[in-house]
Image (cartoon, rainbow, N blue to C red; front, top):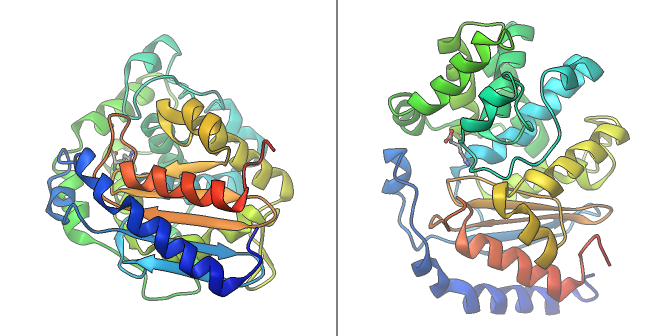
Amino acid sequence: MIKNNANFQVKLQEIFDSQHDLYKQGNVADYIPALAEVPANKMGVCVATIDGKVFGAGSCTTPFSIQSISKIFGLVMAMNRKGESLWQRVNMEPSGQPFNSIIQLEWEKGIPRNPVINAGAVLIADVLTSNFSASKLAFLSFMRKLASDDSIHIDKHVYKSELSHGSRNAALGYLMKSFGNIEAEIPDVLSQYFTQCSVAMSCNQLASSLLFLANKGIDPKSNEVICSPRDSHRVNAILSTSGMYDQSGEFAFSVGLPAKSGVGGGVIAIVPGYGVICSWSPPLNRFGNSVVGVNLVEAIAEELGLSIYH
Ligand code: GLN
């Protein structure tokens, strides 16, 4: 835990500086061409606590494509709207497969393994499309409210790039629809999913927006109930077992925090009862997780003794 604010700020900068060159070990995602345009050496980190402290280093106020980190917010909206019935359409088990794998989905009759792999997130996008009258606007408004920042926007360039390279996500959607597990039309579902992935936010904004998951579902900034304590627990459990895809086991082993990555290079980690860490560096490892992002979260969690398994 942070005992002295000034000392921790110095330590955070030290950790940040010591990790910087590691970005050379990864590769920026290029299957969404717009993501490959972001300079590989960009890097930022933020630690926000539920008692209102914010520590940052590097480009922590620069917006980046949140990509799969958006899966958390979509899931919370769908849980709030559908309650228990949601879990008849999506499971809560780790997949042991790459994030965009299709192979399991046929064996398991169109029921995604969990809501934070692509198949599960496309299903969640269907829930939002089918249950909100203006689902994209509802999503953006939710993000703006959670971050207390109306400047948060959708990066249209990334959106278009995803849409024109989204065949695999379309395949996941059509396969689920063939099993009767998608209600809306696939182009509408994909448009919702890509909109969510294309939201641009900074480390500071992301860390702030996720504080409710460190605080039993209540946003400590406004005291507003964002979700029930049980759903906050459930989201954190899913992030612990599946949030870092097929690196989730190793991440639990070495870091020990519920976490989620995105192919834009962001990583968020929830510290229940304490706060949120968000790191960003575009080059990814073979699991699709940011090389520096993972290392930064690990170093900070170790420095502050934050593992939930202690
Ligand atoms: N939009 C990306 C995709 O669908 C999200 C994947 C990710 O961030 N892991 O492939």
